Image (spheres, one colour):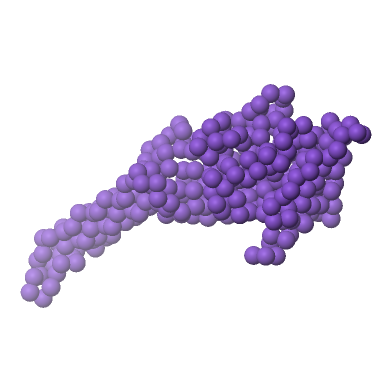
Length: 330
């Protein structure tokens, strides 16, 4: 099951209390205060784990609490600090405050940690309060509580190329042809209910990651179809492949619709470079003219057929060159 959103409650460990103690030793009268400090409470971190691809674990367990610090003891012994708690999530996960929606941070690279709940400070023992004029202090401090907050985890798939198109545009079929991914393929709309990733291999050991995104329809940015739930997954892609089937009633209108939905969802998404892929070329007859699409910013157009493999080599090279051009302009 692919889960890309989860709400969790995290609590930093409380700090230990300081001790109130006096030195008791034979032949040492008036040994003075020797209460130690409390330990620091453990903190909660979110950390990217490349072995994970979903937030499913956080649907079954939503409460996470770090270890508390131990109390201080006599003989100036400081309490042991609580162990930090690390929550593994897939790379590309954003962490937001569930109450306000504010972005706390995100973890992209494997191993990246993000502090989400600070542990509480340990209290001071009575030895800390001794002064030349206050030699027998009995004061001590309790430990502080750790941060307590609710977080929303939002997974945004990390891929180089995102396949964007209407339902039944041929996205899943194309991904199965250019990579080893095996998404569900059928002749009815919305067969893809979750993003699929595939590694595309070219000659000379060149590779890039492609993502098949569920179909986009008009009004997707308002939540129609599967829109809002999955448009987030193309936000992190470097390049968008806009798929327009040759049997579309109006290929130009389909192309404009997809770009309009992307722009309505996120201006940054619409600003990404794109390549237009005209799919299902095997449906064309010798007498049928190729659909003419006037692209924005001179985006290249490639005609392909996933069934006959026609144009697949040209498409992969076009995507690779577009990715290289994007890196060069950064």
